[in-house]
Length: 328
Image (cartoon, rainbow, N blue to C red; front, side, top):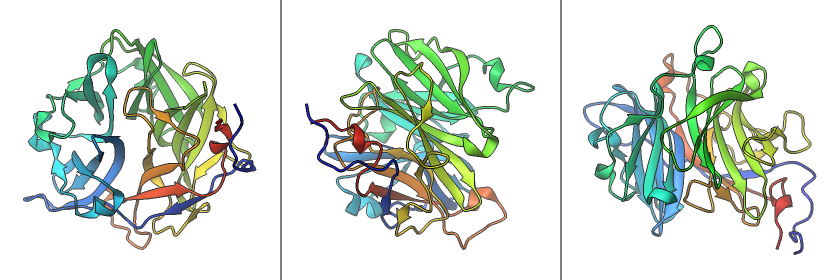
């Protein structure tokens, strides 16, 4: 095999941003302030996007679908509190198809990590009632040792499934179960990335690079210029995570490397995956795209829930440390 025809990347990322693509839609009787925390798969000729909604009734999750990004702004959004998932605090979804069971899984936080399943991702009323992964939160997440857990993300290899989370305090954690037991049996919750609080804050997502044994972790961080993402790599989901790239603090997407930026930094997002299943594969030979949340830098409400987040799409420009892994 030969390596990619792209020139080497010099170890850095560069992006171009779309305009905001998905924004709040009316959901009477509440006022919806924002849409956030996207997760997206492409299946049956459509993009299926799940997101957090922030409204006057609190936090919820919702669904939309469309054939191409030019249709995203007009596609109807369906609040999933109207489905069997039910009302209550729900946020930060992740969606994937679990091939061994032929089921779609929607992962989200409801305090602790929860899930719902369906055989038909196109029918928002088909999701099952929410169920917890854990009977009780692991001790490592509780005071005095821990500060809680949030933003749950699952990825599997051939034998195990791993649930990752962050804690708003500099840690990325990992729990595990066998692929045969999934979604039951998660245990052995350990810290796998340990950084100062702002340098690994929240919103991690995890991928395998197609054609390699390399895995990637992308984590949201905080800087004086706003939110941004850092990136690590590993040769296995149980391996050590090391920075990817040559720049200080291994930046992935920031206000400084995104062209046409309209938001105050780059916040909670997900790479567009090459597969829909539990392996979370991205293709280094295709242009990277990252669906993210951004907010107007001129709007600063006193209440966090009213921050006017919208969803936008980053597209990588030129070579980068991930395209360096492309082999043809």
